[in-house]
Image 1 (cartoon, one colour):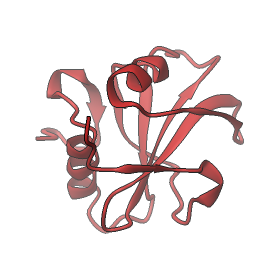
Image 2: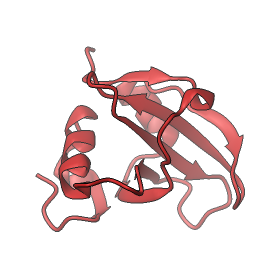
Image 3: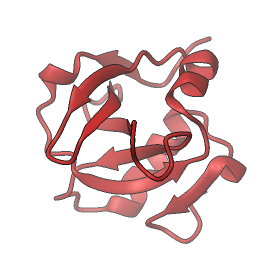
Length: 114
């Protein structure tokens, strides 16, 4: 399966990514199975989570995160740059790169992600 993104080591991120752009109705294990994304166990300011850092061909980065003890460990947050100049456009690009069906997008910062 060819992807419109490449995965990079979480420690190599260069963009601040704390803003949730969307919530996807797939767990990290489902994203690994369907998209080949490998999640790393990490800890942020809130708790332990599984995370993956992805990069578009133009170098723009986005991330996926799911907390172990969060209210929805079977769902995954799509994170983008909190200083994005066009978060709606970025959200569309990230979801498109993931090949995400609109029915799997539970929440998005934009009303119509496609």
